[in-house]
Each structure stands twice: as structure tokens, then as C-alpha cells.
Amino acid sequence: FQLFYATLEGVLIADVKQPILLIVDEGREEEAVMRLSRVGFDNTLGYLKGGIEAWQQAGKEIDSMESISATQLKEKMNGQVPIFDVRKDGEYSSAHIPNAKHTSLSLINNYLNDYPTKEPFYVHCAGGYRSVIAASILKSRGIHNVIDVAGGFKAIKEANIEITA
Image (cartoon, rainbow, N blue to C red):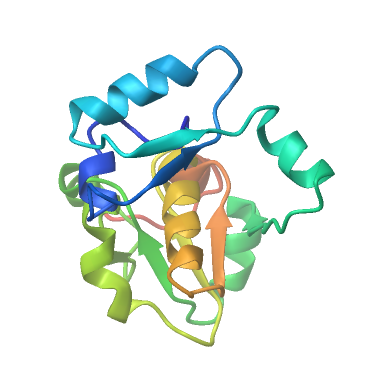
């Protein structure tokens, strides 16, 4: 549940009747159910007792994502690599990597056809939190060639990657 902002659940999960199983920190189960209910999600099945550790101990399938540093991204940018910026419109408008495609996290489902299906591509946000959410959503939609840029735009600026002003 920590991965979702209260204002984004309604945008990212299209069907409010979809059953939801929560994986939340112990003691935050009621808060998660309440926040989801506030945006129309009343079909919470329950929560995973013991969290992700219990899931793994039960031998259930998990997935992971690749992540690189902004310095590693800079090295890869000598060639033309596809980069997607999932920040809000205003953030992108104020400064961004030239040629980075803007696919706001809140509208990511509208951009699914824009993402490459075979070649690796990179996603970033401001600090690394939203890009992990974006990568997770893309993977859940069958797009597995996504690579997260750890630290987001803050790290990109610190790595002296060219940005628009």
C-alpha cells in the first residue's frame, strides 16, 4: 500500500470493483482499507498477514526490477536510449532531459503503446519513488524491459546529465 498515493489509486486502478489484496506494514491495515474506501475501493479482500516475507516463505512467485544509477544512465546516453519521465506536467515543463518522453504516472495507462516492447528503456521521476510505481505498473501490463533510474531527476542533475532550462 505504501506504493500508492491516496490520490493516485483511483487513476491507476481503473475498476473500483476489482478485488484488492493489500500488502502493508503491520498495524497499517485499517488505514490502508480506509484510504482505499475514500476513493471508492470497497472490495478489499484483506491483507497479507506477515507481509511480503510470508509470501516468499510460502514459495509464492515474486518479481524484481532492474535499477541503475544516474551516472550509469549518463554512460548509456552516448547512444540514443529511450528515456521516459513520469513526473507531473509542471515538473517536466520546468526542466527535463532533452528527448525524454513525458508519460505522467497519473496517466500512465494512456501511454502503454508508447513504451518499447523489446529494447530496454529507462524511467525516472523526481526522486525515485514514482518511477518504481511506474515500472511496477508497466511490468504488471506485460512490459518487462523497463529499467528504473535510482534517485530520479535529483540524481540526474547531480550526475550533470544535460537538462533543459
